[in-house]
Length: 90
Image (tube, rainbow, N blue to C red; front, side, top):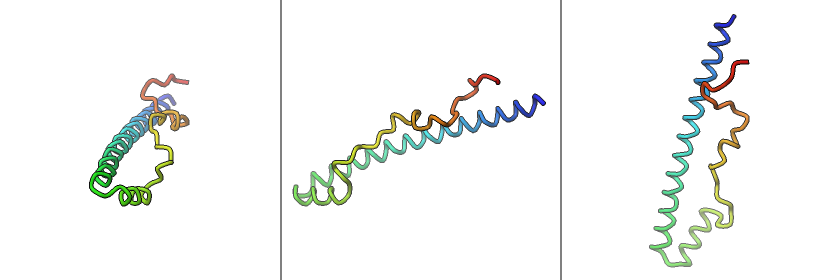
């Protein structure tokens, strides 16, 4: 009966590794898109008259909205068991 338990734990561990990889991949993609967005906003601001650029940027996003933060991803994913093989056996 010990073998199925180890197999299940190994599967859960692999699932946790996949989840960690997915989260890290999404985090990297988020930062790349954020950089690209900043570059595009700078291009609009630099190449168009002030009133036009402000109007375009106001239509594209809310200047007063809080920026998304992914530094607390571990806290947000708190219910998920993302530990590798560090789990203690019950």
